[in-house]
Image 1: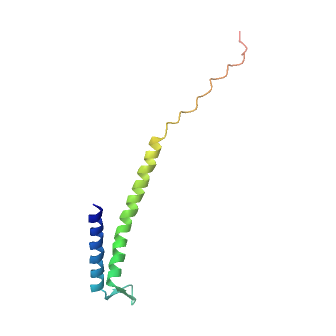
Image 2: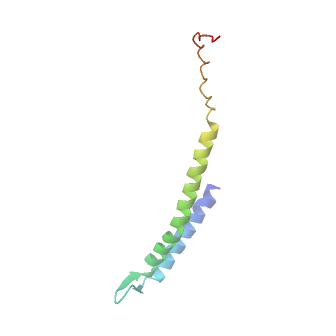
Image 3: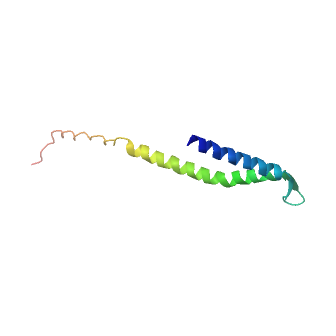
Length: 97
C-alpha cells in the first residue's frame, strides 16, 4: 500500500513538473487603471489554487476546534452546585401578647 501511495505522489509531481515547464510563459494581469502585472502561468495557477483552498481549510479547522471544545465540555465531570448552608436558627424573638 505504501508503494502505491508513493507511486501516486510521484506521478502527480512529475505531471505537475511537465505541465509547469510546458506552460512557462508570462501572463499579463490587468489590475486597476493602467497598472498591469506579468506573472508566470504555473505560479498564477498555484496562487489561485491556494486562494480557493484556504477559506475551505479555515472553515474546516474552525468547525473542528468548535467540536473539540464542545466534546471537552461534555467529557468534564459535572460540577455540583455548592450546597447552601441551612438557615441559621432565628434568635429568640420576643413573643407579642
